[in-house]
Length: 445
Ligand code: SF4
Image 1 (tube, rainbow, N blue to C red):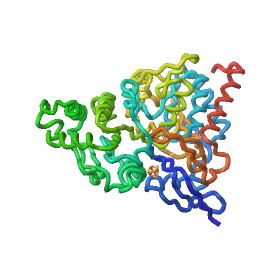
Image 2 (cartoon, rainbow, N blue to C red):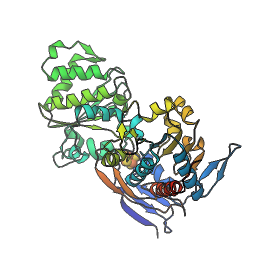
Image 3 (spheres, protein in one colour):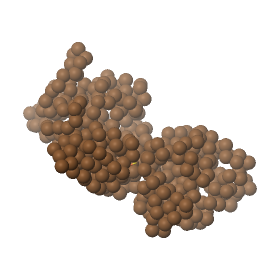
C-alpha cells in the first residue's frame, strides 16, 4: 500500500513550507504524489528516491576529459588530499543542505585551514552588512500572518520566487488578528517592473531602476515631517503617491516590509538595505513595523546560524589561521577570492557556482582542482574534476533547516536514496576522518 506522509518540509525556497503531504510507493523508493506544494517544490520531490537516471557513484575526470565512476572511498581520499595539498582551498554553497551538513563542512574547513562561504555572499550578503551597521527590527512569519494589515514587497517578486509566501504567511491567510484575510490588508509593491506580484497589490510604485535609495529618502523625509521639501517626482514616483503611501504606513496597525534582490543587487546594495531598516525604525514612531529579507533557499539562513555559533561570523569565513576566524566581505567573499585568483582548490556543495557565478570567476576557479558535491548533474558538476552524488535533504535525508525568519524546522526523510549514497554530513565526516589519517601519516604530496 502506498503510504501518505504528512507535515513534510519542502526543500526549495526560503518559505520552507512544512505542510506538504507526500505519497510514497510501498517499497519506500519513489514519490508518487505531492500535495500543498507549488510547481517548483513538486519537481524536487519527483527527483528524489531510487529513481532511474539518478547518479549513484562519484565520477572522476579522466585525462581524455571523460568521467569515470569511482568508489566513495576514492572520492573521499581525493577530496581529503586536495584540501590538504591546497594552500587556500574554498568551500562554497550550502543553501541546499541541512544544518548537520553545514556543521560538518565547518569541521572540515577548520582542519584544512581554508575559506568557508555560503550563497549569501552573492545574495543577501549585502543585507548582512546593513544588519551589522543598523540592526534588524524583524519578526517571525507567524506574527505577519496573525497581525499584519499592511504588507510591502520591495524589490521582491514572491509570485515567482517564493510562490506560497503570499498564501501561507502574508496576504491571504486569516490569522488571529487578521480574520478577514486579504480583504483586511493593504498590499504595496515597489518594483521597476509590473510583476505578477504587482497584480495583487493595491498600490504599485514602479520605481526607476537603481533609484530605490532616493525613494527611501523621500519616504523618510515625509515621515520626519519634511514633505514640503521633496521634489514633485522622486525615482519616477509622483509626490502625491509618496504622500498617499506614507499615510497608509503611518496609519497601519502592523506593517511588514519584505525585500529581495531588487535592493541587494542594484546600485547601493547594503546601503539600500540600511536605509530600508532606518525607514522601518521611522515607521515605528507611528505604529508597529518590521522588516524581513526574502531569503532564497530553504536553508540559506542555516549557515548563518551554524557558523555564527561555531566561529562568530555568518559567511565569508577565513579559517586559514586555524586558531582564529576572520570575516571581511569584499576580501574574503567567494567571487572576490576567485576574481583575484586567490584560492587554489574549490568545493561546490549544495549550490551551482558553475551557473550562478560570473564567468570570469568560474574561469579562475577552473584553473585549480574543482569538486562538486550534489545529488544531480548541474553546470558545476559538468566542469568538475570530481562529482560526488549525495542524498537530497528533505526528500531522502532529514535534518534541521532555518526558514527565512530564522525559525528552525525539522525536515523529514520521505523516501530512501539509492543504496550507498551518503548524506552531505556523512560524506564530509568521511573526508574529515581521512584528513586526520593522512596528517597522521605525514601526508605531503
Ligand atoms: S513556496 Fe517554496 S518552500 Fe513552499 S512549496 Fe513552493 S518552493 Fe517549496
